[in-house]
Every structure is written in C-alpha cells, then in structure tokens.
Image (cartoon, rainbow, N blue to C red; front, side, top):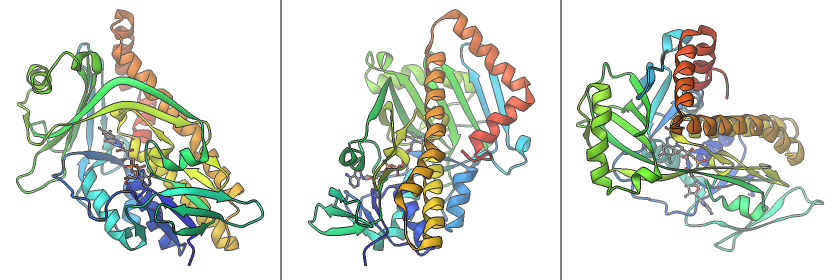
Length: 385
Ligand SMILES: Cc1cc2nc3c(=O)[nH]c(=O)nc-3n(C[C@H](O)[C@H](O)[C@H](O)COP(=O)(O)OP(=O)(O)OC[C@H]3O[C@@H](n4cnc5c(N)ncnc54)[C@H](O)[C@@H]3O)c2cc1C
C-alpha cells in the first residue's frame, strides 16, 4: 500500500514523525541513506530536551535515561553579569532533560525499523496538479505514490535540493567541541554556562550510567583561537580557566568531538507537496540547546495538521495543511535564529561598552521577575515554542 507520507531521513525528527503518524493510523515510509545497523560508538554527544519535547516522547512511551536539570546558572566569565534559573520558579520538576543522542536515535530507529528503507535516498519527486499524490522515485528504482514528502534529512537536505528552495546560510566562524567528563559541581541537577573570551562553555549533568561520566560539556570556540592551537594543547591551556571559575577539576572521560558551527534557514519550507522539518529547515547555534526542541515543535505542528485533516477527510489537502504548518513554525524559528545570532555577536565582542551592556543586561533580567519567568518558560518549553 502506498504511504500517505514519505519521510526522507531517519534521524530523530523523521522517526518521531513516523511513529506519531502510525499512532494515528496514518501510513508512512522512512527513506534513510545510511546503513540499518549503524555502529553506535560510546555515548558522547548529548541533547537537552525541554519539557515539551520530553512530553512528546512520553506520549510515544519512549523510555531512555534522562538527567534532570533543575537549576541553571549563566554568567560572564570576565564580568559580573549573571542569571540564575530554577525549576521551582515555574512550578515544574525540571527545567530540561539531558539525553544521550545515540540512546534516543537508537530507540526511535528500533521502533521505526519495519517502516524504514535503509541505504536509500529519494532520486526524484514528480508532481502533477491533476493527481492527488506525487511520484517519489527512490535510488533503488522503486516508485512510491505519496500525498506529502517530508524532508527530515538534516542540513544539506536532499528534499530541499529537489524542491529548489532558497537557502540562507551563515557561518559563525566557531567550532563546537563536545565531550563527557567527571567533575564535582554543587549538585547533580545543575547546569552552568559561562560566556568568556575563551568561548561559550556549558557543563550539564549526564544521564547516569555504570562507571559513566558525571557531566557533558559543549564548548563553542572562535576559529581564530582554535587555528592557533593543536587540539590537545588547546584543552590543556584553556580548560584550567573554567576549572577555576567552577571550582572543580574537570577530567575528560570520552573522545573529544568537534563540529563547525553555522546556521541555515529557508525563505519557504514548502514547495508543492514537499515540506522541510527540523534541521532540514533550519539549524542554529547550540548555545541555547534549542536545535532539537525546534525540530520537535515543527514535527508536532506538522503531525497535528496532517492528523486533523486526514481524520476529517481521509485525504490531505496539501496546500492547506502545509501552509498552516509553515505559518505556525517559520516566523518563530526565524526569530529564534536571529536572537541566537545577536547573542553570539554580543558575547563575542571585545568592545568595552558591549561588555558593560551584557553584564548589566544579564543581571537586570536576573532581578526582573517577569522577564526571568518569560525566559525560563520559553527555554523549558512550558510556553510552546
Ligand atoms: C555540537 C552540537 C551540540 C548540539 N547540542 C544540542 C542540544 O544540547 N540540544 C538541542 O536541542 N540540539 C542540539 N544540537 C542540534 C541537534 O543535534 C539537531 O537539531 C538534531 O540532531 C536534528 O535532528 P534531525 O532529525 O532534524 O536531523 P539529523 O539528526 O541531521 O538527521 C537527519 C537524518 O537524515 C539522514 N539523511 C541525510 N541525507 C539524506 C538523504 N539524502 N536521504 C535520506 N536520508 C538522509 C541522515 O543520515 C540522518 O539520519 C546540537 C548540535 C551540535 C552540532
């Protein structure tokens, strides 16, 4: 039977969408270009889920290990600016939840295995206005008819290329390095983020594992600093600064992974029956840990629109459904992207007035309860993003 939705990309967002549609009796097929049994190396990379993303996973009964963040401290390493958040301030159990990327990816892939074709990609999509579907040609030369093609294939989305959508790219000239570590912070539920000329350094609790590390670190550094160093020497020279600021020894537990940082977005998310969702549509700086949460909020809006329409008409009026999805998500995602760009610029600046402004800014928000509540509610996902 032909699927209602063909999903390009069996990452977290593509597999989540497929599972949610299945729960609502809507057929989908996931087309994933990588191997079925990808070798998952040790857990290193983590994701910070807000409570809304966690709720979506709970509704699918996804059970993986989480570390709860109940308190968050953000401060300027070179100044006096600081801001503290706590889950008590929004009457929630936690501000956010740290999961290992591999745990979540693997769990969702297991659930979607039977609906996934691996080592395959979409070669072409043919649309004809007089038909109620489009023709999707796969790299294994199979042809599928689908009402919608969802591009969940990450940065460099194949669906975006086939749809010839206009991309806007920005390079941050920064690299993120990430690793797990052992450290002794005030408790097991506090995350700390330090802004400094040695980069933006975030240390968060790790999901508990036997003989596992206590913390995960995501550290964004200007490329002009990194270019001067050999990787190990950089860690030796710079980690000490943060150890001093945090008052703890940080012992690296895992391999150190690095990612070039850039952001991208599209003028439109939709072209005919083709639509972009999650990192395929946008990517942002990891400093606010919101990448996957924007993806989940996209996926939720897309599923809500398709499910409501399909339940009513056993059909998908793609023009109506996809337009609604785009209207619900694009403006907010763009706002988030721009805010992150401004944030990165302010914290990169060497200008004395800028530094003063960011210190006053952070501390003022800290002391203004309604502003603080606004930020916590958004970051934690209590206000649907
Ligand atoms: C260092 C770093 C730290 C991060 N930390 C956080 C964090 O703390 N919190 C957070 O919310 N986010 C974080 N992010 C962002 C987060 O990882 C992404 O937003 C998320 O993984 C996007 O999921 P996705 O499913 O949309 O895309 P992806 O994870 O990119 O998945 C895309 C899938 O599509 C497949 N694919 C690609 N091309 C094709 C093709 N042509 N055909 C078929 N399949 C294809 C890929 O193999 C993959 O399986 C971080 C990112 C980085 C780089």
